[in-house]
Image (tube, rainbow, N blue to C red; front, side, top):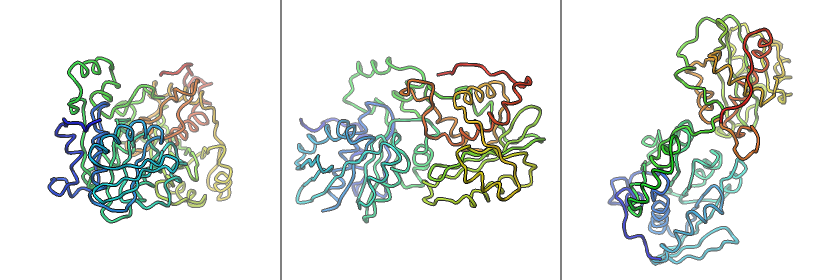
Length: 419
C-alpha cells in the first residue's frame, strides 16, 4: 500500500503542525474532532509518529483507544503500511503490547493502551512518556485520560487527541475544546468535505443516511445531544431560572461517594414548585484527594447556611455518612427511597408539569441532564451508570419528599419511558 497522495489543507495541518516552520509550532497539543470519515484519524496518527521519530530518540510514547482491539483495527492497521512506505521500520510486539519503530537512526517505543472504564487508569500508571495520542478520547473515562496526560513528563512532550462529537456537556468538550486556546492546543474541526478521498457520490450517500441529531454529529461533526436521553423533556429554557422566588420549605438531598463523586442539592418550595437553589459536587478522581465524612459534613453545613432544613435525604447505602450527620445533631436525616425505574418516571412527570426548576448556578445537575441516557445494551429500562450522581440525588429527593404528596393529589405518576 502506498501513502495517501492527496491531503486537504486541514489534513496537512494535522500532520505538520509541530514542524518548526508551522505557525502552530508553539502549541503543546492538537485536537481533531468532527464528522466520521473525515480523514482526521489517519492524518493525526501519521503526524504523531513523524513528530515522535523526528524530535526524540529512545523515548516511549502511547497510542490509546477505547480498547486495544479497536485501536489496532481503526488506527494501527491502516497506519503501519503507510509508515513502511515512508521507510519507517516497525516491529509489532503484540504479545507485549507495544510497537518498536526505527527511522533514520532514531528509535521509539509506542505502547498500546485501552481506556475502557475507570479501572483502566491503573494500566498506564508508572510509564514515562514523551507523548500520547488518544483516539476517540470522548469515549474514555476522564480518569484514564488524565492519567495518560500525567505520564508525559519528558521535556517537549505533546498531546494528540481525536474524537467524534458527543453531548455538548461532555467533559472533554467543555474542558478541552472550549478551552483549547488557554490550554495551548490547536483545535481543528473536520467535516466529510475535508477528506478529498471521498467522492461526491459517497458524500451524498452519507448525507442521506442520517437525520436529526445523528446527521448533526456524524455528517456535520457538531456536539449535540443525541437520542436516548433519559429526560428528553428537560430544557434549560423551560427549567432553569436565574433566581428562585421566596421559598417556604427546605430540604437537602445527597448522593454520597468516596471514590465516586458526592452530589448534594439544596431544595426550596414555592407555590407547589420545587427549586434547586444551590448544590455541592465533588469528584475525588478529578482532584486526586479523597474527602472524609467530616469534610463532607462541613460542605453540608455550608450548603444549608441558615435555612430551616426539614431533613437531609441521603443515599441509603451511605451508612457512615448518615451516622456522621446524626452525630452532629443539627439535621434530621432520612434514608432515601431508591426505586430507580419509578424514580425516573416520577422525575419525568414533574419536569413535564413544570414542578421542578433549577437555579442557573447549579451547573453540575444541568450538565448531567445532558449526559444521562438509556443503556441500549441492557435489554431493559436502565440508565448508563456514569455522569449520574446529581441525577441520583434528584431522584432521592423526589421519591422521598415530593412523591408522598402525590397520594394527596399533588400529581399523578404515568408509566412508560421516552427513548
